[in-house]
Image 1 (cartoon, rainbow, N blue to C red):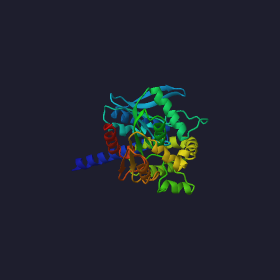
Image 2 (image 1 turned 60 degrees about the vertical axis):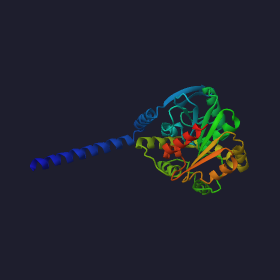
Image 3 (image 1 turned 135 degrees about the horizontal axis):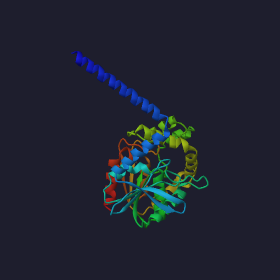
Image 4 (image 1 turned 90 degrees about the vertical axis):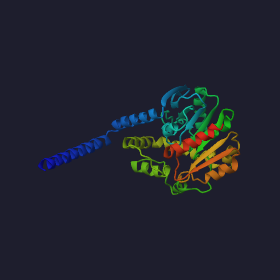
Amino acid sequence: MIFQNSNHSWMATMKTIFIVLTLSVMVFLQGCSSIQENISAVLFSLEMKRSDIRVSTVKVNAGDVKYLERKGQGSAVILLHGFSSDKTDWIRFIRYLPENYHVIALDLPGHGDNIENHLSSYDPLSLSHGISDVIDALKLEKFHLAGNSLGGLVSKLYATAHPDRVISLGLFNSAGVTPPVPGDFYDALQKGDNPFDVKTKADWENLKTYALYRQPFIPWPVDNVMAEKHIKNNAFYQKIFQSMTAHQTMTDPEFQVNILENLAMPVLVIWGDKDRILNVSSVDVYSRHIKNLQTLIIKDCGHVPMIEMPEVSAQRYAQFIKRL
């Protein structure tokens, strides 16, 4: 009995020491951004390995461009992320695509690993020209193209300019259509509050409530690094935001409809029904103006289906392109 009590006491003491040490390390790491960045890089590397993804580089006139790639003998699939994000949005989505597809995830100009040029234009049309340069450098003649949010709008612009090269178009909560029901993000802007204006960690947490209905597990070093990146790049992101929201593709409903009506290839629209940034009523506009269209509204999902529900959205997208 004495031995058992002593052993129990010893175990409790060791457990307490372990907890104290763990908390001490976490507190220490909270203040060391370089350590958090290293941990974040390792975690992303492990995620990419699970999805059989590697980082590749291609040369364009503006310099070297890094992209994510999963080799495959079948058709090529190009993926574009949304505003203020980067190519890593697609890592888990790619994991659930059939292995035969050659998948490439690109950074939009001014995003991710691409340089920030304060003298360049970053409106949606300029972004599509930048993506076009990368695709030309990759020497891809025909491919499936898909994009989320701003990446969806850039995809539409590229597809209308190069209909002979785009086999199909996948639009995930795509920008470039004025929703019949404005939604929470529009209401915030009308009150002078831009959720994308991230100056503090609290702003970052607020932005996540707009972008994500299902909050996926994000390890704290990764979340901190992402928050710090947005805060650090906020002034530049606001430059892009102003160029984006002032452009005709975002302000003129007739021009937006004209783009939709000129999409000759098969189109799949995927939308989360709880999107607070671009209301799900946008799907009605696509349905009225695209002839060769399929739609999928995902229940209890927000603005980024490939992050919140990667398996569901990838499987549905794979079914779509397989038929082609």
